[in-house]
Structure formats: structure tokens, C-alpha cells
Length: 516
Image (cartoon, rainbow, N blue to C red; front, side, top):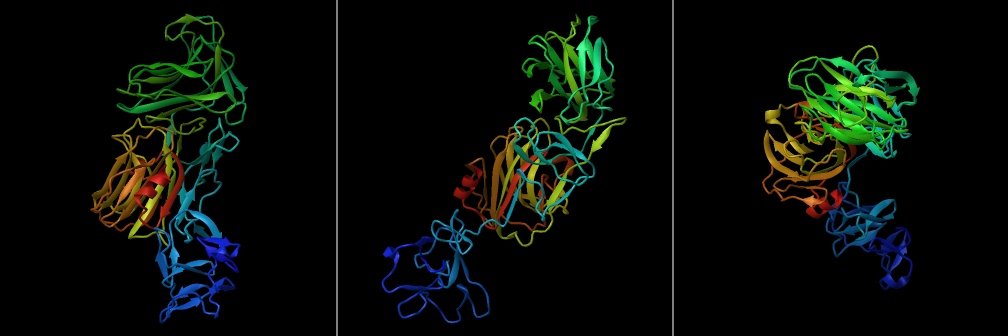
């Protein structure tokens, strides 16, 4: 630190911290006789305050626990035994452009930091592909379309909070003309009456009429046996009272349904044969719209319908309508136990391709001997048997039975806990299942590895250190997927908020700290 005495990494602006006889020259501490205040050994030279060996190599010592007692400063760098002291503690001050912690050591710790929250583009190290367009909510809360191979940095359409990078599996919207409500039974439908979540005036109105019966609009489909389906639509109250309901329903081979009370847009009743547990939901969008979702399991291949229905009680029985209803837009029917982002269709069904992301080179940030992988992410559901992953440093070219995984963070499908794994040659070296994954709620997890020394933490809770661990050889950091499971079975189907890699095995206390 040029021309200032340095104590504990901070400049001293008075003489209290000076030793008798000390003077300063261009930031190098000198004795009164002009000698540099360092302890030198044969073959050690200094270049710009950095100790260099006779072969031109920088001398570095890891001061993880703080600076050694014999540390002095040279051009703002802490030096001990002719080596630069590098510490991993939190940065507190900056000297000569270098971050220093409160102990006065350089805090040069993170090799890779991918922060996706509020981002507008990906780090140049990330490769991203998706073979189709896809929708997301932009920073203004408007549903918009991302181009082929363009990442989606999604926002909550109600709060406008940044969600992170959206990673989803491939899905198909089986409903054609998804923004057009078909002519129905005992209802009056008026097209293009309301501004939809995508900003276009394509929201339709459905009202019951004075006929005795059920009041609905259908789209037909034939399910595959023993398959989960999810039906969703954007619904908006246009003045209905607390005794009026919107019903989103699958009928025929199965009979899963959800009643939404229009006055406050909450789930009033969910049920029916094949209903997937905890699948009925109402999620706020923008401009008074809510996405209503229900999932069900088919039992056969009986012709079925995806139905939008008006009701004036918590019953599917017939009644005489009085001209009440709601606005509808963006219907989607997809095979799966949870909804994914809206897939607009016209004359035919449309498929959205999977999001695929990775860092394909581990150089220069990866340490093969030891390291720590941190992930902050969320998943859409715990209703399926998939194993969604936030990140995995692995070798995707090796078959599952012989897989090598130096660090992976995902959800354990059987327990809905966060799963942390190190695998060598198909054999689990470290296996931690901790915490509980809540759909659409972010979790923080970190896994540290080193030969015979590995551990992990989830949301601030540390596991037990594994003292028998072999570190395998790996090639790729896969994002939002495992890389070593069937790809379609390990897609995150949620948001990546942040991925960080530290080139050392963080201490257990540090693991707890960064995941809290």
C-alpha cells in the first residue's frame, strides 16, 4: 500500500503503529539504514513487491486460518517466509487493487461465479442450446418469446422479482389454438375481449347461460395409459362474486378437477379420480390474471377432454345459469405431473425443446485435487419420480454404471431432499441427503471434496464428514442437469440462481456459512 504503514490489512494514518526507525519508500517497508524489512534466503528476489524464485516462479503460501505471526507487507502484499499469503476469509479492504480480509490476507478464493439472477446474458464460459423458441416473463412482467438457443432469465410476473435462468425439459402443448376458447355447451363465448398476459388483446370471455345443465368449453384428447397429464389455463375474474367458480378439469379417462373461487382467486376444492397430490394450484401472473393448474393420472386410453367450466356452487351438477363467468386465455395440456412454461399453439400441437447448458472446459478454474461446488436453485415440483439437478461436475461421456462425478447437487426423488454426490467408477464415494425441497422455493447447497475428506451443507445444515473418498477424473460442469442420468429424467425444471466453484475444500464452518 503505497507510502502508508499497513496493520491488519489497513493503512495506518498515524505513527502509533510504526516501529522505531521505520521509513517508507514506494510502499516497501525499509529500515532506517535502507534495508528492506523482509527475511530473504538464497535465490529469492523481489519483483514489484512479489517474491520470486531464481527460476521466476511466484512463491505463494495458503493462509487459510489467517496470517502467520511473522507476516510483513511489501507493496501492499502480505509476505511470510518469502511467500505471498493468500487467505480464504471474507474480503474487508482493498490494497493496490487486491481484496484483503480483516486479517490482512489476500482474499482470492472463487474461481468461477455464475450469477443468473437479473442477468441479461450468459457468461462466455457457458454453452447454451434449445432447439425451439420458448416463453418467459420479462422484467416488465409481460409474457414474451425467447429465440431458438436464447436463454430465459425469467421474472415473477406479479412481483417482478428476478427468478434466474429457467431450465426445462421438452414438453408438448396438446391443445391446438391455445389462445382461442372453442364453442362450448350452455355458455356464451366472446373472443378477444381482454388484454392477455402476453400483452395482446386475445383473452376470451366465457359466461353461463339460462339453460339447465353444466356450462363448459372442451378440447378433446386421447391419453396414453398410466400417464400423468397437466391441464392449465390463465383465468381472470371479471366481476364474479364469492359464489361463482372457475373449474379447470380433465374428464373422461380420469376426472381430476380444481374449483377456483373467483372473488379471491384461491383454490376452493380439488379432487376427482387420478388427481395428483398437491397439483391443484393458482399462481398470480400479471394484470389480474392467474394461472390455474391441475394434474391427473390416466388409467387407460378412453377419449377425454380438457375442460374450462363455469360453476355457481362447489358441485359439477346441472344448474340454470345467470350470465356469470370469467376471462380465459392460454390453455395448455401436457404430459407430465406438473406445468411448464406456456407453449402457444395455432393449428397444430407444438413442442418446446429442452434447455441444455454446460461449461465444457474445466480450465483454468477447476482443481482436480480438491474443491467446493455451491448451487442456489429451485425446482417446480416434488410430484414426480425424476431427479432434477442444479449442477454436476462429471464426465457425461461415461455410461451410468461407470460414471464419474466429482460433485453433483440435485433433488432426491424418493425423499424430496437435496442430494449431494461424489461418484467414482459408478461407486458412491460421498452420499448426503439433507433438507426438504419445497416446490418453487430456492435452496442453497454446497459440496466439498478432497481425498478422504468430503462434506456438504444444505440451507446451513452441515452433514457428517466422509473420511473415505476417492476423487474421480471429470470433464464438464453440467448446468440444470445431471449429465450422467437419462437427460430427460434429471432436468432441473426450475430456476438456476447461482453456481459458484471454489478451488479448495471449504471448511465445514464455511460450508454452513455460504448455504445459510
